[in-house]
Structure formats: C-alpha cells, structure tokens
Length: 115
Image (cartoon, rainbow, N blue to C red; front, side, top):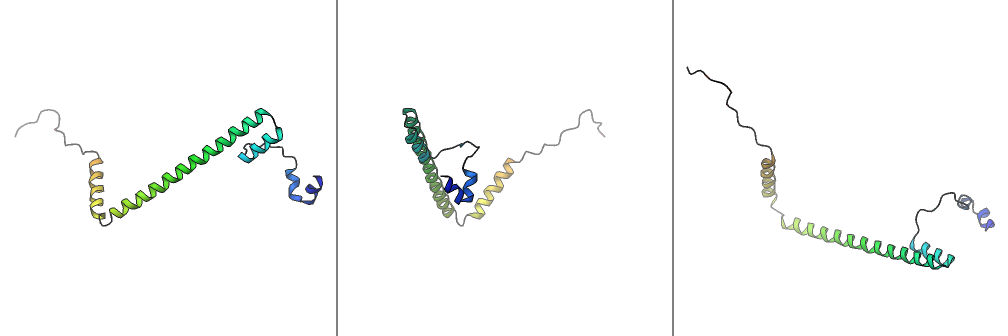
C-alpha cells in the first residue's frame, strides 16, 4: 500500500484523512456492512440502501411532474395564441381593481356662512 502512495503523489494527502466522512453512497454502505460482517452493520446498510432507493423514486416523481407541467404550459400557451390583446386588457382591468380606491373629498367640518 505504501508503494502505491509513494508512486502516486496525489494520494499522499488521501492516505490518512483527518476529516470524517459525512455521507455514504449506497455502495459504500453495502461494502462497509460486508467488511464489518455484523447484524447491526448489515441492517444499517439495508436501511441506507432503501433510503437511497426512496430518494431516487421521489426525484423521479418530481422530474415527471415537471415534465407534465411543462407540457401543460406549452399546451395552454398554444391555446392562447392570438389572444394577447384580450389578455392584456384583462391584466389591466385586474390591476385597476387591485389599486386602492381614491378617497372621496370630504365635506369640511364646521358651519358655513351662506352668502
């Protein structure tokens, strides 16, 4: 092992890392369980692999949802081709409705003299 490290200069820094790993891949978890060969290690590796599988499933669901939304957006955009003026008018009307109403002029307080 020392020969490999001596022959490859870039491996010197990797020989004894002072930093503990923060994450395993599912392959690393399986290899660690095989190396440790204990029921706890095997059970832990199975849970890690299941977590990775579930994470991939969730990611795939989100990607499919994004694809479906993109297709829907394109279909809606095609359906509104040529309606830009009407849509602009609707936006303008909604914007005007959202503006706060201007207060009506108030009658001055007090008495007024009639002339």
